[in-house]
Length: 229
Image (cartoon, rainbow, N blue to C red; front, side, top):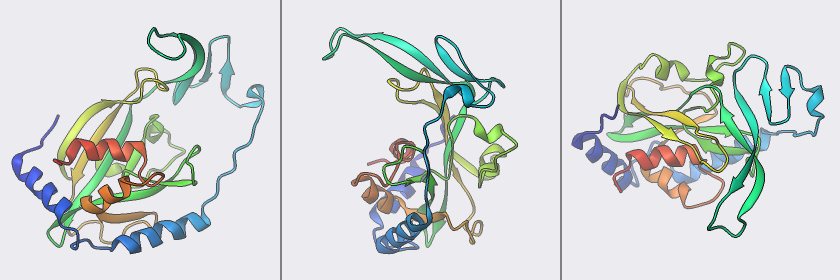
């Protein structure tokens, strides 16, 4: 479903052009992000696959006993127009559909995105800016985890402007698709937000996209779906 009328496009354009109408300055957003990085850390350790609890390994895949999360497959690739015509590689196959979405609202008459600083293994500098909700392996259905603001998307607590399945990068993810959603809430909602989140205009978001290691690929994909320019 895609509800993307001309009025919403006009308001998005206004948010892109309104460079001095943001709730926060560009510099204050950088300060917020830098301060969070000071307290964020991630330790990655090698381990024997046979020591992993509830994960199984056979000749072609690594998978979880519950059938949830994801599966790692070993594949042989053949391509006729690449620098290498044949190679072997791992590829990830999702077991559950994920959700990726931005909450937006008008602040001072300008649309703002609710952006989170997300810690993920593989990030170049530990944290990257991500959509409000990013659950790309179905982890939101795991009762052991709590995903901030997920309830807005599961219960559609707002105006849905964009709601569609988008495919992920095919060279690393096998036929993976996730639900991409843009949801608008009333301007009186979410006044006090979690410290790992910040409101920014589309103009500010597009400025961060010009630099590496700020906006992650999921946030970039969502912005490409809704920005008219």
